[in-house]
Image (tube, rainbow, N blue to C red; front, side, top):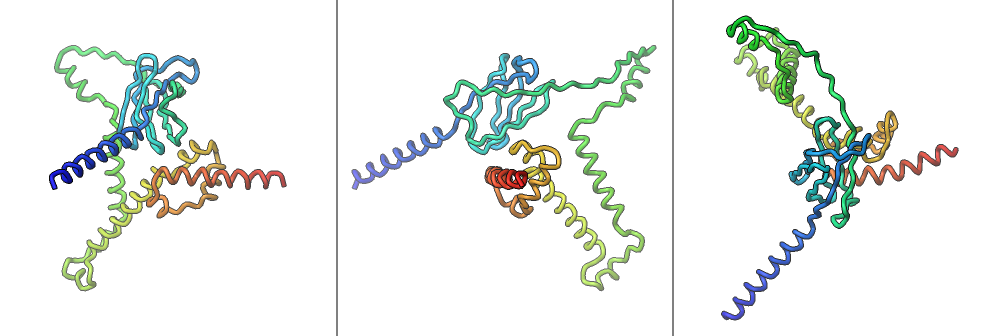
Length: 259
């Protein structure tokens, strides 16, 4: 009995070790190098995030970095002086390669003119600093947009003839509850629209297919993906479906052009 127990424990440990080794081996650590798309010079200290698995890396002084990457992952690359770039992994990157080169497009910033102000005393200096208009952060801008959205939604509500709570109850659901339901429905649709755009938009289709302009929207109409399909399907499967549709679309388009 004791021998059987020892055998089962040993077998369990062996299987667990093999499972851990397989999961570890399935992770690909890929080498990349970031270069300037115009000059070819290395882009140093860029910030790279694997949006799918929440892994991150920072490029060194020569633009090199390595990061864990699975098929279907999305990399986000940001660097001061360059446009942000998204990289989609479709299995085209191998861990045993020396490195893959990624070109970043330079970005110029327009700065406002510099003004030097002289204050005669410290009190005037404090007053001047308090009156400065500091640019808003992205979080502050998002908060303002959300507040404005709710203000517009409230202004659209019919508040002229607000019935009393007792009179409203005669109709089953009071007036305020109906207004809340309408607002909740609008917020739900807005949230669903944003979720769809995060997974399937003109920008994503253009990055995958290389289509531009009106042809992107024609191809999206050709795909005819419903919102329900997009919300229930993973990003990886959606992108594979886009590629499958694009192959058929390209054949149909070339045959029509020949006619």
